[in-house]
Image 1 (tube, protein in one colour):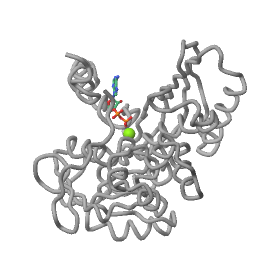
Image 2: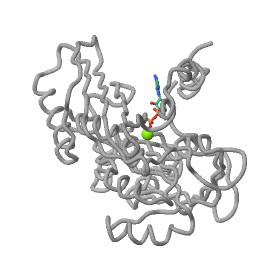
Image 3: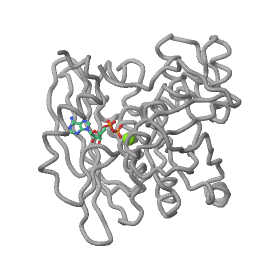
Amino acid sequence: MKISNLGEFGLIEEVIAPEFKELIRKNTTGIGDDCSIMPVSKKVSHIFTTDMLIEKTHFLRDKITPYQLGFKSLAVNLSDIAAMGGSATASYLSIGLPENIEVDWMEEFIKGFKTLSKEENVPLMGGDTTSCEDKIIVNVGVTGEIKNENIKLRSAAKEGDLVCLTGKVGDSAGGLQILLNDLKTNDSGLKLLEQHLSPYPHMSEGKWLSDFESVHAMIDVSDGISSDLGHICKASGVQCSVEIENVPISGELKKLTEEQNWNPYELALSGGEDYVLLLTIDKENFKSISEDFRKKFDKTLYAIGSVQKGKPGIIYTHKGKKIEGLKKGYTHF
Ligand code: ADP
Ligand code: MG
């Protein structure tokens, strides 16, 4: 059987994870959440995450500047730290480069990486540098820490919770489509491109939300709501319903999809790379948390659906009617 028959998550769940079940230590969280968790005391845990960006799979060398690639390589990893509710402490950068890459290119990459490192106060503490025949390969690891009582697992969603988002979705997918279709960009197109090429991870939002006991499960949206909310459903053994009309999309995405005759919700639900946080909150506490969220961040905390009993999975509705046939989130292979 080819790995394409198993898919990315089949490969992780059936081939990789089962082999290590017995070795993973008690009271730690291994494969399956945004970060691994190692308790260091009754109060605090270390968390770690790693993510890879490969040329032609995750980016096109002539469609992203090295500065943007450096920024994004760290951003996608910090986003996983945010998804646990933690703080990042250090980063590690391993990079494979074809030998004809200019030193200028690497200087710009590091400038982009440094900009976000400085902004979030996360020093680069190590890594590896190698040659690679024909592709740029970037792998970043980030360590972090978190108070044990604040850890937000994918498996913690509870029946009766509301499903919420810390930002709009679909802009990044819109930006990617602009690049892939070589569309002319106007001001609104530039905003979509910016969202795709330089997403800012929701670190402050994740950390702030993690202080609330009534915030239950949390994940970052890297593969699209369809895929990422699916992970929460599976890990928590719950069903979620999502009201499409409540999924927040930007005016810029609406404009692009109208011009191109595309379905904005397909991009918003399955496009991915939004790097906003998707979380579930006890219904009773949503009003006060969302009001405080607005005061703190001057942004909306969007409620897009709810958690219920049932076969794990997502049910999409539009004005109360069930809708089917939506594209699934991104997976490799
Ligand atoms: P994320 O999108 O948050 O980075 P993924 O969906 O990529 O997470 O991965 C799901 C889980 O599987 C994570 O806990 C990740 O650490 C783990 N994982 C993915 N690939 C591997 C691998 N090759 N070996 C071990 N664990 C892996
Ligand atoms: Mg993640």
